[in-house]
Image 1 (tube, rainbow, N blue to C red):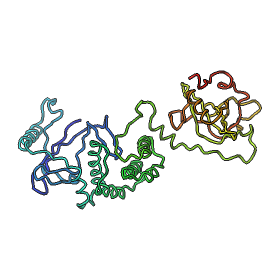
Image 2: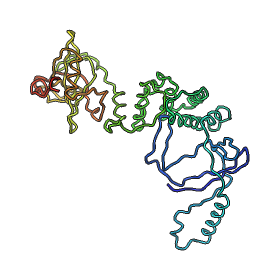
Image 3: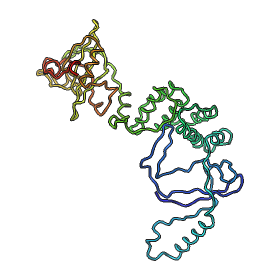
Image 4: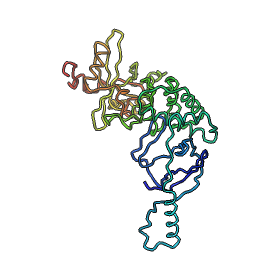
Length: 382
């Protein structure tokens, strides 16, 4: 982070001078991003668009304002020049004289939450409405983040509704902002509907965290996390699992070879074996109240029986084993006891290995890892 010129502005209310520091370079390393779109980076501080004059305490809009005076008090690389030119020496001396002349000029004062909200509601802001209304929202949330759960005031809600009308782009960032506005207004159903969108990887983790807040009926702003607290499951994977569409495939018009094996749901369970290898399971309730758990390899792969063509197995997954249980709840407990988790509860990079398409029964040629070879633990063994 390198400092840039110091800018002096003249207050439009009292004609007093106040200062603003600038940067010539910075970066966003370690930046925090908030659900309302605010970014805070230690190495890239932002000048607020609304400030308070330190003399008369009136609000001053920095957007589009031109400085009355500017000067430098930092000269990078100057001391490394063996013989500075006469012009460079004269310029540095002039800048140092300005710095001395205006050294007592006070810096601007930060505006309060109520001042910002009142400004955007009572002033003509048609030149920069989105920027100013967004900043007013951020000021409100700065205080809400510090003070804890808090209801929005009526004028603060009015600002959000006005901002909502300005955010008309179909970009990922603006869709997220619109959903966040509705969430903070308590309009959870509308916020969830807006998130019915295929976000890019950069925004899918944020969409997942906003959706989780919607599901909690939480109206408060928050700082986005990059991963879950255990540092393992990424929000991107959770969003992919949430968005994953696994509808039942249409029944074929012609008989299939090998014959179609029907399972009535696609609520997958997964067991991570390691080395990019996984087992998959589906629970199928039976009419007598019992439940069958069917098992699959990654992508539904298995050895192709002799006498069949490769085309016969296009978009098909093999059932490789099965176990019977008294009911669905017993099947769920048994899967958990054997390190299986529902895919939607434990998403991960294994999302790309989910079995697909129509099923066929390969149990006759498979070794029955769980049903025959003893790798299944009963719930009494756990």
